[in-house]
Image (cartoon, rainbow, N blue to C red):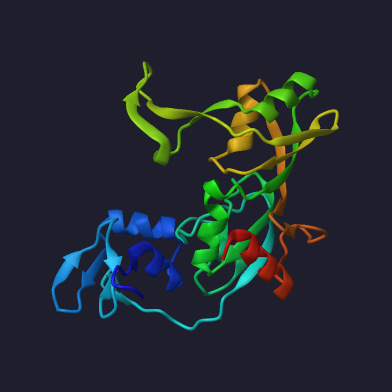
Length: 261
């Protein structure tokens, strides 16, 4: 470690506590503190860096680097299971998988969507996969409520203007109905091809909240079923709904190489 230290969110993530994004949230909520090597104590902030000799505490508990085995597995998520680490929420994905280790997921699927979810306690890998700037591919099969036209496919390929209303993308403004105003974005150009009268496949390199559903809705369609079949080199294959399996050594090595690790 050099004299500059390392970003605090990276240190917490590499300790297997959570992903970098989750670490940032915990820091913002004031749950992370430092005891520096000289004995001084301070509240962490998003710009904090860890140096040799420092001690980091999360909710008063020391965060330590461990040699715990790294886990890498894929799940064919069924409908009704929620991609959240909050175990107070019924049917959360952590309890469904049934592991006691810290597990995060690369690429959230909403409650009604099914398919491939990558679960790992390798926070560094998870962050590399989730970083939109890396343009990592995720592939989906989608069924909509009416016949698909060429204009629909072409519009999806070019990019669609959608409004994001999750907490992270609120503008702080209020509309005429008293509701918070979300940020409007145009999705990246992507690969889309028709596979049936009401079915298509799509490959995304970003992952806004409910992005496919919002894209379809913006063009006058409703996504009836969404199933993710691939994350980068990982294929869902014939893994049955609700089942999980550990990744092979080859899959892990290829995944890390593609992620730039």
